[in-house]
Amino acid sequence: MKALGYVLVVIGGIWLLVALNMDTTVVTLSGMRVNNLGLMSSKQTQTIVAGLVTLIGVIVAVASKSSKPATTNTGNLVKCPFCAEEIQREAIKCKHCGSDVVETLANNDNLNFKPTDMDPKKFYVSRRDGLEINESNVDLLIEKMVKANPELDLKGIKQKYFHDLHDLGLSIPKKVRQKFFLIIDEKMP
Image (cartoon, rainbow, N blue to C red):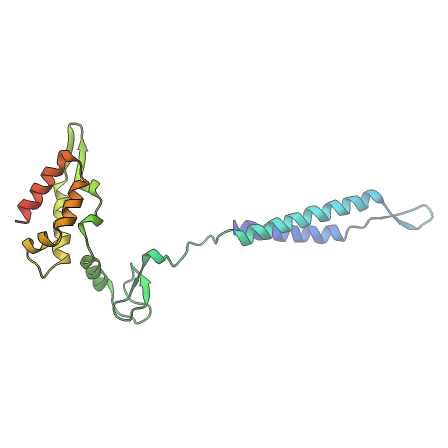
């Protein structure tokens, strides 16, 4: 849209120059030049239309967003663990201090993990005969809790996340809720 605005400004500007330079006089039989009301009216109309096209072009160019995507998305920014400057979450190296940040940021994400961050719909699948628990995603949940708490044993992890697991279980349909809790109890005694 921004490019269209620039094109309209150029076309309108050229049209305006042509309209303003229109000759509105005619030669009479005696050789004199006199103003022609019809040509003056045409010049006036052309000038107004060219001015409007230019004005519309300026408005479109100024009001439209850039065609390039925004490079900084504040929701995707994290602080570098080494220099505390903001960097993209996907960054491999910090652009400010040059430190490798991939593993450090991944570990920070693990440390901030909560079971309720996961979508409850991932823990069950719909079949023709009803709902079924998705055991691989329950395993993934347990794996994430273990990674987030390397200093705790399974019992300590289960105690730490007791309320979160309970809230997550309540957001799962009743038909598979009991199976969800059974798998958690089996794998985290």
